[in-house]
Image: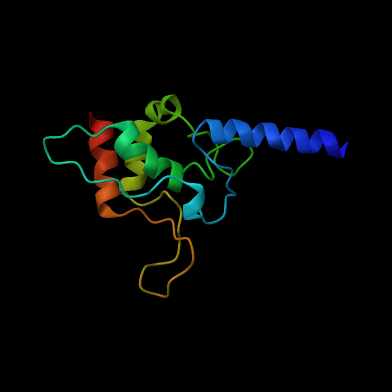
Length: 130
């Protein structure tokens, strides 16, 4: 039984690593497990792309919970998943409903905060509108 469980974990880990994701719990994301959160901001004329601008934001801040077996009610592990919900993601990030991080800023720093910057929210807005 232990061998089967280890084999399943190895296959899952290999699948996640092959997809560019590393296994992460739904708790605070560790920066060594995920893509960089702050890509270079595009100029106003530059097109916002999923691979360069949106994927690092989603994989760091959304995918730890929005993947099979975690708290998010749907998966956000790939382009098709995110594209299908682009307007919803734009809406919930704009009002800061997502990612959920209840502590108000300025009342102490906690490890692994999941707040999006204004710049990241603007990128999501631009991408969803395009």
